[in-house]
Length: 248
Ligand code: ADP
Ligand code: MG
Image 1 (tube, rainbow, N blue to C red):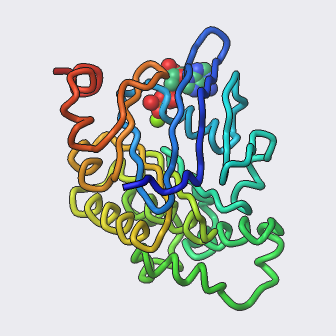
Image 2: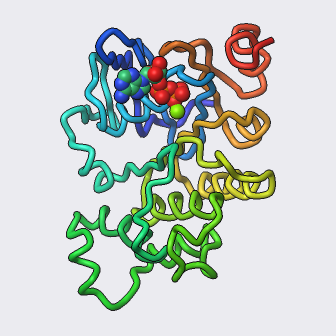
């Protein structure tokens, strides 16, 4: 089959922190309506690559394209408006706001950023927010504060907040870290459902079986560089991946 068009593409991206070459000539294509996974040991540059793609760190070199159009001058804050949403490896929720309010911040980001001020004046909860709460199964805790939630639940709020922006591209950095097996399966199922609805996704995870189940394509990374890429079952069998990632 012909591959679907690339919604987001990064070419030859390098991010150097002084002498540390966190990402050193890595790239990938996110094909429309597919889930691509990045596999790589700790410190291989996965989070830095995501930070580069979402414009949170400057590129030493490389090209970033959305729908074939370069976007490396687009500020991070404008990316939500262009349909790119992400979650972070560590939970970043506002502790004094409720679950609902935290998720609502996501919707406001997409709307163009009146931020907290804007929604304090609003009475109705936007449909995108209700939908995100429902999809992530957070209805019962919508009035709770993040501190009252289990770690797995707090991670789900992060995903809901990203979904509330109604993204076209969703980037997830270790969304299931700290979750139990059942919760991990739920995230995988949610991602597959979103994929079937056409959402383009990038997943960074360490859980290899989950990656194989969830992703349409895997890209293996080591020391800031591409090791190999392809169909998930093939990539995890690749000797270079076994050695770099699985320690075999
Ligand atoms: P991963 O997400 O794959 O675990 P990271 O992108 O977090 O990898 O890190 C890649 C490399 O870059 C590591 O060697 C890490 O120590 C280094 N690094 C990450 N962030 C910074 C930073 N802000 N300043 C300096 N070095 C960094
Ligand atoms: Mg990381």
